[in-house]
Length: 342
Length: 223
Ligand code: SF4
Ligand code: SF4
Image: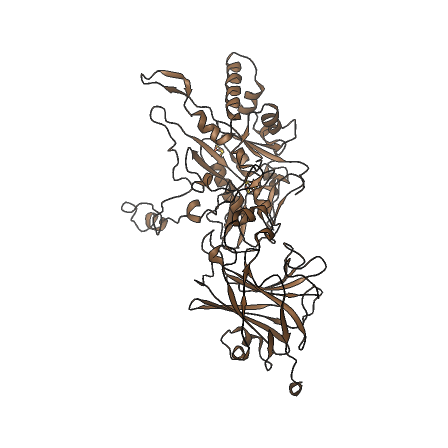
């Protein structure tokens, strides 16, 4: 694989994500409405700590350890959660609305994409959780691409977006096994694997990804890794305030996260206890690696600066005063484009 | 193995594995072996299959007939179930292929080599169409058409019977095997056990060398 000339990347600020799933639905409406795609959520948002989507994906292997390929598991449809059908007709028509309630048709499910939503961990009054939105990481060392014996997966030279060539794909699913983030989906109708395309048709028109543009929380920054005027370079390289999820998986992701700060703990007397964080350090280290502690320290000191009335470029960036500045130049309004379906 | 001459018949006739034409053809038992781990194309596949049995189907019974126009192979092997449509992400379909050299000297073990193609006739249980495939080395296989080769499988009493057939000669520029009555060529077969997660290069095959295939001449009287 040739190294791409440039790399597009995304930063998600976990301090601002409210778990509204607008990103998820924006993606669903745009890309995964066809037959065979019902169970696909190229964008997912899970509550952490939690089992995630697909269920227990962090225990499914894949990726690389010390540069060596690690075998992975194929998540089942149940692991992802089927696309449920509801008894809408029964509830909304025929005058039975006061007797029947909305429920999933057929077999009662025991798992779904957000089954453990808002559960989190910890004991009252020190319970905690946060939301973790995920898309394909468009990795620099994509395990999916390297696993495919048909060379059906490409990493675009111009922007590093990782795409599956559905004409070459024969549905072997080695990519699905190998991706440690479990962000490949198998389309049983088309018999090909499918995944997040980083909204490349929008990107090519200067429009930000649907998940980023639709996000009401101003969580998602977009741009080229090497654009020193853009937010990605500033957050990832200059300020080193954003980290990849599970760097130990060895795929070198291009989605980065600003880790979540949490309110302080309460002690037995109900007094604020600043000595220990509400979200245990070990937990954040298990997600983002040891550098996460440096980032949290940096954020605290930058926040202190602003409280003292000083300026902080980092805080200004994260607050994202100007919405359009979040998109690294990909800020064109999609309504100004006439889209044609090919 | 001989490809027995049978009187000219409709293409359809051959596709029925129970058809009378198959009674006349002598069956040959081929021992199958798993493809070597070291030849799997990607590090991920090698890591995933290290220490696992590759090629769970140990033998296949093979027969061939031709009628001067069409060459048909009949493959039969035992398979625990005949599931066609994999319902879940970790389920795969059974498949089978016959491979022929497109030119003399093409190596079967590497599925051809640059400039020395092999020609595979590929059937998969979940696909109505069989694929006509050309390869010039491992990982280079490409489907040249989905019309010329026809395949049909029936699963009964724990056995797959699959017929894969094509016209002896076809009009194309693609480096495929062109065949004629009376000629001798090589052949190989491959079987994928979907239940066992077999797909792509993970399969049972008839070994690193070509098996002989002798096509009967068309008898004088019928010419
Ligand atoms: S996240 Fe998975 S699917 Fe996306 S590029 Fe990385 S390895 Fe491939
Ligand atoms: S749209 Fe934004 S705030 Fe809402 S879940 Fe997605 S990332 Fe979080």
